[in-house]
Image (tube, rainbow, N blue to C red; front, side):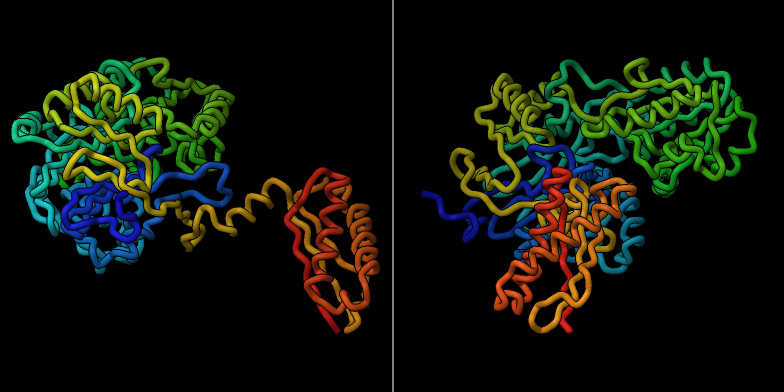
Length: 558
């Protein structure tokens, strides 16, 4: 039987892979490779919360396992600048305190995040050139340029005495990416000829036949669509898709319009892109204040908010809450993005609001206004033909995506596939690949200025309050436990306001009766008094309203 991974998760004679996030889910990518008793991390990302986490916007992997072994962590290599790959670094780096390696554009985006977090002088970021080679601890690293929906996506080659691993990151094969270089097919072919032990590969579109499509085709389509629009045009897209932003500028220029950026994240990406040599040939964008003074047929707005985010630029415009921009009947809004699973309701609400204003809405369901940044089945097949790994480990996808890529890898004659999950330690060498144990995993959430466990009591209590309401009671008793004033009870989120007075009086009576029923000895016990009052309130509310709210009792003895 294998030794427990908790006591020996990284034996000197083994090469292991361990995901703390990004497997069985899309987002929150955090991968670890262990060899020679040392660890290397690839990516450290976030995801965005849904209605099951009230008051929370951002979630990320719990790094406890590797944080406890931070002295064995030699570095963090970042594949690209998407939030689900770099967004957790400002939050988690203080627990890791390791060097960070990134290519120029990714480093520029990360630097802005670190400045916001007050960490710009603490985090050691090494800027690595595209196709660079360097050493991190026990690993010899090489970057291979791929294409994606952001500049400078990199696959990471890890060379060890036990074999070579290719960690693809997010990628596709786009022959005309518009911004940045095309995929380095020659480097992938050389790597395959050299021999690859394992490929850890993006599975997002493993269920989709064919190819993902090219940014150049989207640009042509956007230029055509904008040419048919008579009034103001808004293009909503991901801020990180620099090629799409450039295409919006091209569509504006083709039809005598001026392009403006609306949304802070778009301006941050514009700054990082121009700082690193991208968008050099694109004239400076207008601000929203400048765009507001132009005739409606002479402006094109590029906005954040394609996923229906409530505080985004497009959402504020749709609600007539933006200080500068107004959209009206006859204007056009183009959603140049896909719907991220889980965002369907938010996007639907936004689009319904826009439709109610008389705005024409164009989505990827109607026209070619978006292509994915992830490989479809034909691209995955080509990657397997180039790299020819002995072991396939699908990542970056839900379980159905992982299983689909595993089947495709088998069809491509890959000798062994391992469908894993977060927390499983996968031995890649020596011998056949196998899951040899499991380590604790979890999620953290950003709650105001704190990091909290997603499964902790604070969030559980908040969910209970959200769904069932809250009741607060104050008891003033003497030393013998007799009430010296009527109980004070407040209930929120249970009944309508008109019911409150009658409901409160009913609860006061039930609490008084419950205390009166206690034995004299029990009334001297604070805990028993509070519990009796709490149960009286919950039982009464359950009987009348079918609710069991979070109930707190404050006891004052005089």
